[in-house]
Image (cartoon, rainbow, N blue to C red; front, side, top):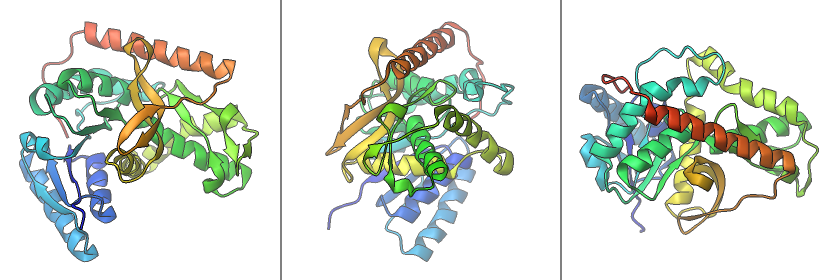
Length: 307
């Protein structure tokens, strides 16, 4: 029998809990290490997940650990975030940049420095936080999951609009996980044929979807957890294919790009873009470069707490 990988989750808030539950339910890992700021919360989540494991007969054995223990894992999911009030009504994900940056830097320097495994960042704004973490830890296998979730939502929304099975939709959303997301409509196909994509209608639905979910249940959680599982299946070598994840692009800007993954090794595979899509991708890169410069040149709060 092939040994299953060990996966770690850092952060036990809503998304961290959803990710951990999905990992146990999927049976993707053999051991699941969980760490957070509050050890009592970590122990409680591990116990709850152990109940789930027993009920399902899952091979994933959950265990509470110290953050430093996560470096024994094959992959680590970073879902830590600060406690803050997001006052942004537009560009909402960017509202967490200043609050979350110190935590992400601290995780990179103190927990994951020199870590050779796969790191998946969920914390928003995910493209910026992924770049900060990669620079702080020095790792080469650091990825953000934002555009993977955007692509899943895009395929689902377009399938509903066209009244076709979602499995027939093939297309990408790239760029920023946020207001500067780029819908690759010109290369989207339905059942292998070029699709007539109502771009503005789908863009509006895509932008509204996370807010509608958050209004109903507090925040998105199981969607991001699904994106994490899909990424881990690719990056741990179990499922070759293409997935959209945040990686460095021209000029060192990190943004969502389609990655062709084979045996766990990713290669950027950008589809042919229309002139409009190219301009949108350039604009997303410029926006993220400006945001990164502002974030790294502005003092951040000294005291923040992770979830």
